[in-house]
Image 1 (cartoon, rainbow, N blue to C red):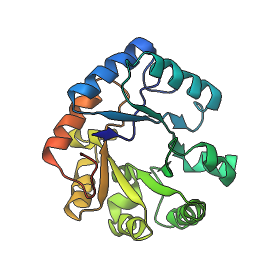
Image 2 (cartoon, rainbow, N blue to C red):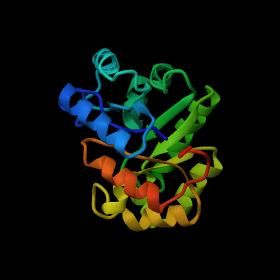
Image 3 (cartoon, rainbow, N blue to C red):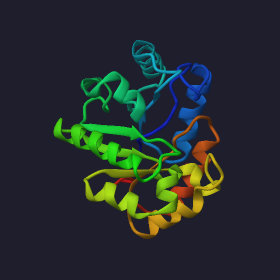
Image 4 (cartoon, rainbow, N blue to C red):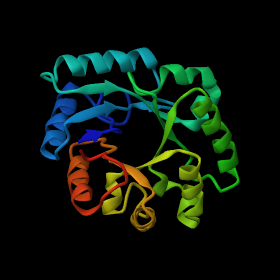
Length: 216
């Protein structure tokens, strides 16, 4: 099983504080059935430091005893606009065309028109856009058709496993259930910031299925 979204890199964002915590998270991931990890530190303020993040990836890889790790980023839409669309060429999953995009939690449906323009630009550059945790977005919570529109555009949707316990904001379980009911998710990821989030992944994996082959 590939975990496509986690904050396991040491000392670069609000995830693992140091290498010891990174390695503890790696062991928790293995216990949850994860066989490959895409490391996706935050590409947003105040965390983003491209070189530091790559250095942290190399440090973890050198200490991971051969466990398959891949570098990527969780790219905040506002930060991408600030950096410019050309920056996407350095922010996709290393070795693939997959691009993990985070939208604003509080955005309304009108703001999604701008997001659609950015998604189209990314697709024109050849990227498969993956939308991080749509169950957190207020517009999706109010109207599931917002998520349907993203899927119709060719995006893949990724659920963050903590929804099973209510999610980061305590209100994500019901919207996630609606998206599962309509078979809109392609991935469940840990979005792990600590060891405990892998318990959520194991529970979510046992209870829910997703379209595609994420759990193979």
